[in-house]
Structure formats: C-alpha cells, structure tokens
Image: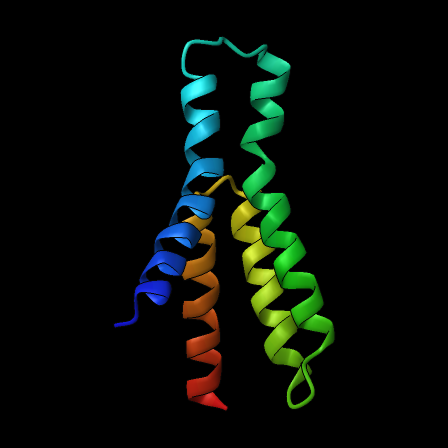
Length: 101
C-alpha cells in the first residue's frame, strides 16, 4: 500500500474520531439541565425521521413499501422503543410485506 494512502486513511480516521470523542470528554463532568437532557434524548428519533421521510417520497416502484415502513417506524418510536428496535421492527415489517407481495 502506498504511504500517502495510508496517511489519508489515518487522517480520515482522526477527522471522524475527534468530533465524536470530544463531546464525550468535554461533557463528561458537566451535569446538563433536565430540559436539555430531554431534548437530547429525542435527537435520534428526529434524525430517524429525517432519514425516513425523504426515502418515502422517492420510492418509484411500490409506494406502499415506504408507507408501511414509515408507519411501523413511527408507531414503534411513539411507543418509546430504542432506535435500534425501531429500525429492526420496520425492517421486519417490510420483510413480511415483501414476502407476501
């Protein structure tokens, strides 16, 4: 492997690692107010919505595929499940839908 490629890989690793590690180190000893903690708990679901909605509107083949996936994801998220559970339940529902269609 070329030396420049190896240096680029190391550089890209540092560039992605530092922004993820820095808040953990900086906010480790800081106690956040309860309001801010509640807001930050909802960030993964807001990101999930931002990822799902454009995908629903850009489906060309079967619009029900997007509608069912989004509906299951929103229902499971509304029930308070973890983000991983939301994604896996949507995948399971779409797998069942595609099996029967």
